[in-house]
Length: 424
Image 1 (tube, rainbow, N blue to C red):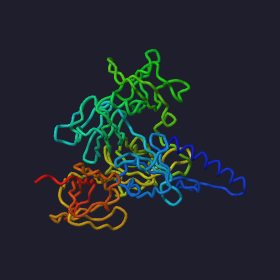
Image 2 (image 1 turned 90 degrees about the vertical axis):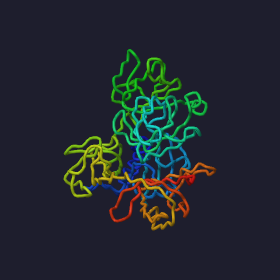
Image 3 (image 1 turned 180 degrees about the vertical axis):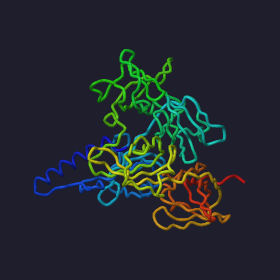
Image 4 (image 1 turned 180 degrees about the horizontal axis):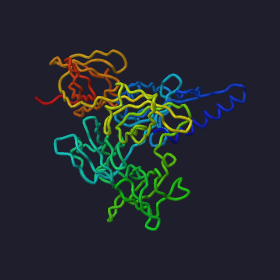
C-alpha cells in the first residue's frame, strides 16, 4: 500500500494541476477514473530481477528512487519475495519503489515439521504461514532451512496480510540467533506493525493482533493525541518480551497516517495482488485494501461466483472522487501449484523479458512467465545470485520447481529455485 511518500507526491501534483488551471488549462477526470495527473501504482512481491518484476510486469528501475523502511536506498537492497509498492512514471517504468517489512521480531514457536518447508511460525503475536512460494534466506549459517528456526531467533517477514494476526509469508529471512546479537547490528530494535486494539491509558498497554504491547516510557512519534484504538502504528523494542509476555516498546510511531487504507487522488490507478479476506456483493478486500465492486467491474473468467475468501486474486482499480478504491478488473489466480519437479536443465529458450521455456534432461518442459518467482539457493562454494532470472539459468543447472500442470504435457512454473547439484 502506497501511503506516506505517495501522498506527498500526489500533493505536489495537485498543486501543479491548480497552477496549470490558473494559466488557462485544466484537468479533469473521466468516468473510468483517469485524469491527466493520475499516477499508477502496483503492490505485490518481487518475483525476479532485471530490473524488477512485480505482478507479472517488468519495471525498468534505471532512473527509479528506492525507499527501504522509509529511508532512501538502492535497488541492491531489494530481494526476491519482498512485498513492494511500485509507482510508475509516464512511460510505465518504475519512478519509485517502496519496501517495508511486515514484521521483524522474536520467534515464539516453530510449528513446521522437521524436513518440511510448509507450516506456521509464531512471531510476536503473529501467525506466519509458510507455503511453497515462500522465499527463505538466512544470515545465520547454521539455520539454513525454515524448519531449523527455533524460539528466540530473530526473523524478518514480508508477505500478504490476511488478518490482524496472520501473515502469509512471501519472504522470511533469519536476521540473528537471538535479540542481543541482533541489537549489536540493529540498535534501533525489533519492530512490528498493526492496528491498535484494547488500548488502556491507565495501564499503558494495547494489543496488535494477539500481541500485548507495554509502552510505558516509550517515545511516541507523530502521535499528538496519544495512542488510540484503530490507529495503524509501528512499535520498536530493544528489550523484547517481558516476564508478563508483553512486548516492551521503546518507540511507538504512527504508520502511514494511522490507516492501512490506500491513499491517492481522484483517478489514480492501483493494482494489488493477494488473498481475498472479505468478499461481499459490493466490495472485495485483498491484503487489507478494500475495492468497491460495481456494474462496470470485469471478472477475467466472466463470473464473480468462482471467487471466494482465501483465493489468490489480482485486482486492478482506481481511486474515485470520494477517495475510495473501485475495482475495474478482478482476476482469479490459478492456485494449483502442488506439482514439485526436480531435475537438471538441458536447454533454455527465452522469448521476451522473463518469459520462456526450460527443458530438463528427462524432457520435462517448464514454461516460465513474468509471474514466476525465481530464487538462487546455491550455497556450496558459490555465492547465490541475488538478481537471479531466467537468463541466468544454463544447461547443467539443477533446479527445483513448483508448477501448474497445463494438461498438455507441459508445466507453468510458479516458483523456480536453482540449487546445488545433489550428491550421487
